Image (cartoon, rainbow, N blue to C red; front, top):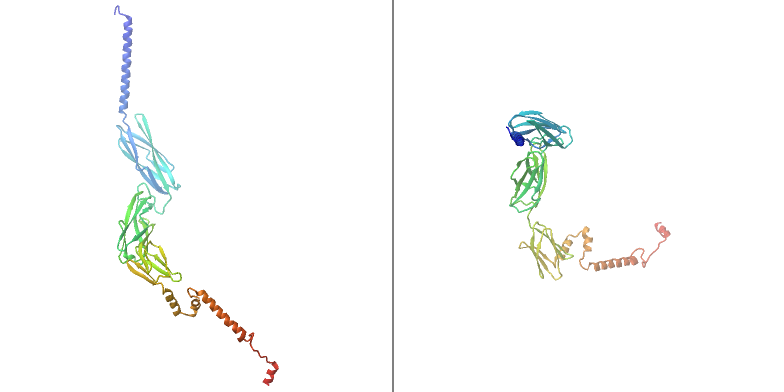
Length: 411
């Protein structure tokens, strides 16, 4: 262009260059954005279980699941880092979900916890993703039996009694009582049988019923078992111990569950009277509270005694008789004035050489003065005998005969 301004040309050139650079930048940004949008790699690893319990000398195949979301075939690489013997198929190529077995074997390793680390790597369009999966293996001591009744464990079943609602039962005849047992299996899953031993000569009249005699528990599962106790109306054994047990059905191992004490409700008292002290003792020997009435010709008492409690009453001299009423009826009648004489008459009728000295010194009140008089009389007669009647008496008339006179008479 003739006569064109050079400054205008330079300005147009710079604008063009800036425009080209801007377009290039936009195209590159779109390319990167498009590349990022096409990156669709997504996968997850799901172990069959993250924990495993094995006895010494046993093994297990643990499944490892891979979940994929990819638009092309992917190649995976696996590596196992473990203090135990463990391995997995080292590589696989796939478009969709798949799973692989992870082999774990326990030898003579000491009981304890061992982490097994699975390292997984995948390459996608030049990019590598690496992930780590941990499986915790618990090694336990070798049992007599190898249990495989639960997934992920071959440890022995172990039934634990976590709670029992009561260990002592007070029961009426022909009535029902229930006991709740709470169990937990902290070992391998198994089936258990629960039973009881009744220590009673009348055990056929005592009925025990479990809502489940056989029950299965998985590892860490809990269960409540209800026991119903009922006795016949003529069951009269005051105290009955019952021993409970459970049996693990696979090994036959018996598990002691402890003792339950069964006491029959009853009301009973014991009345004792001591004649020398004129003291009455009433003891509640039953299992329930008892209500009593004690009357004399001067006083009246109403009593409420708890089990094993004793009430003492000191009789007064003026009181002639004492009556004990139990359950609304006359239970015991005592004549306070003649009780001692009756006891002495009984002793006299049974008098013998073995009991004579006892009778002699059992005078009751005022016996001390009579003993002193008897000793004085015995001493007086002994003194008379010594002074006048014995061969060596002090005042006796003695005759002495010479030996020679005896000889002359014999001739």
